Image (cartoon, rainbow, N blue to C red; front, top):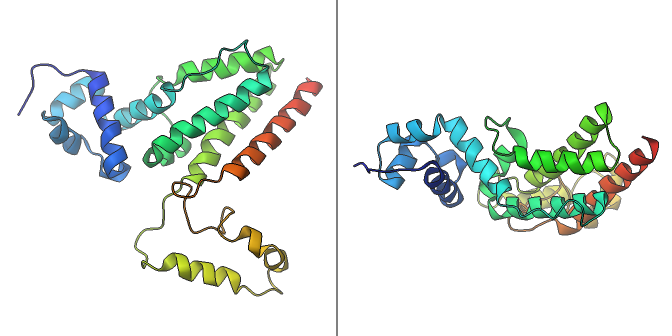
Length: 226
């Protein structure tokens, strides 16, 4: 085993492909080294720790997004387009969504995206603490919302758990859950906490667009006050 040359981009690309095929839980330095055909020490030399590898792979997903030019769209239109592009990128690599939305990054590779968003928000007039708050609202919405949409199914459950859960929802006590009972036909299978299929197989397009519209409306009101 062993190769005369190995590059960081090659490692990151191989890791992304491995996660897409086998899931994030299966990724290890040893497993990836075997996949590439090198010794694990070669990976540590080029990429660092597993956490740094995962960070680099995550950044690659976002870095592949071709962002619209900052000045071709209004600031709010630009944010809408970026939110949609980020969601599309995360849908292409759903096995990484838990990391993108829930773990602190250990690499600066994603900073170009951060820089572009901040520039657009500054152009909209947000400064100081308002700039930080609005940036967090945008990033938190995109990464958090889509990560929740792409949540994987529960582990160690029976094969018919979806049918069982759907039945439990429809048999809830109407006295204890009157609002849910009134709206169950709409909620069942379509809303967070009352669905049994991941957005990986049943994307929540309508709800994402509605949520994005609410975010932008709120930011417009905020802008008028700065």
